Image (cartoon, rainbow, N blue to C red):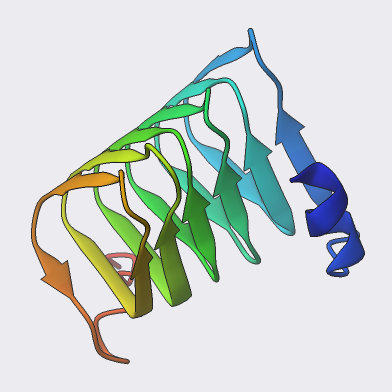
Length: 124
């Protein structure tokens, strides 16, 4: 997975490795690969990939979001949202395009249109 992300031009790739737990929000100006656990909201300007051992408990927002691990929270992708293998997602999702592979589990509401894939605006 890591090699594929780098070959796709993700020069600003951030990694949360296995055995690492982050408590708090994560904001990346590039792409993010999660193989550990994040308890908090996750935002990436580019792509987010949650590996098979990765866990996120919080809101997830990115351009393309690929999930092979576990997410409990709202997910929005401005382009593609993909559930890979034995992904487990509990929460509402919004995306322009959605791919769910056989074996993945999803429990929540799904909205698919250009307006729903936009990130929520900060309250002023």
